[in-house]
Length: 305
Image (cartoon, rainbow, N blue to C red; front, side, top):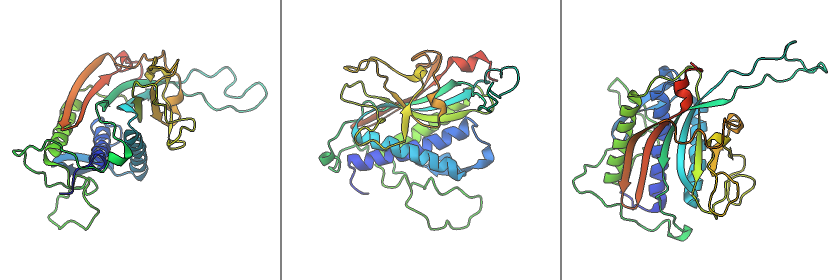
C-alpha cells in the first residue's frame, strides 16, 4: 500500500463522493434504473450512471469540490434534489410581447425536496508544503482489508474474466478508512429505503457551504485560485448569512445549471429542512465527517406531485 498523505486521503474521499452521488441518483430514482450499471466499491454494492453527460457533470463537480477542499474553504457539501414548480400562467394573448417579439416561457422556481449533507468542517486545513507528508489514520489491526473493485467496472452476471481497466478507485485505501466508507454506503442504502418517493421530473445539484471565516471568500467573481465559471451563488433559500467579518454575504455556493440562481421563498428558508435523518459518521484518524439527509417543506406539501 502506498503511504497515506493528506493529498492521497483527500483523493480517496472525493472518489467516495463520486460513488456516493452516483448511487444516490439511483436510490432516489432520478433516472431510470436501466441507465445505471451495478458495480462494487469498498466491497459493497453500488451503482454508476451509464450516461456520459451525467458522468462528466458529476466528475467536473467533484473536481471543483476537490479544489476547494484543498484550499480548506468548505464546511459542508450538499447533493440537492429539487423539483421545478409550474411556471406562472401566461398573460392573455400567448407568449408574444406587445411589441410583437416572442419571449421565453417563464420557468418555475425550484422547490427543495431533499438535501444530502456531508459535513467536512472538521477536515484539517493543511498548508501546501505539508500535504504530501505521511499521516496516521489510526489503523485498526482487526479490520480486514478490502480487495477493492473499480467503480468504473460494472459487475457482470457471467464468469468471463474482466477486461483490463484503469486502477480501481478504492485501491490503496487504508483498511479502517475503507471499512468506514463501506459502512457509509450501506447506511445510505438503508436510509434511502425509508424515504418517501419523489415526484417525477426531479433534478439535482451540488452545492457547498463555506467555513465561517472572514478570510474565506466564495469561489466566484474572479477569486484567486477559483475555477472560472464553475460555481455560481446558490439560491437565497439555501444561503447562510452573517459570516464572521463578512457583511451581508452568504456562504452557500452551487455548481451551476442556472436553476440554482432563482431566488427562493426566503433567505435560508430551505436550510435544515423539516425532517432530519442521520446517515453515518465516518472517522479515521484526523479525518472525520458526518452525513445526513434533510427533507424539505416542499416535499410534504404535495403541490408538485
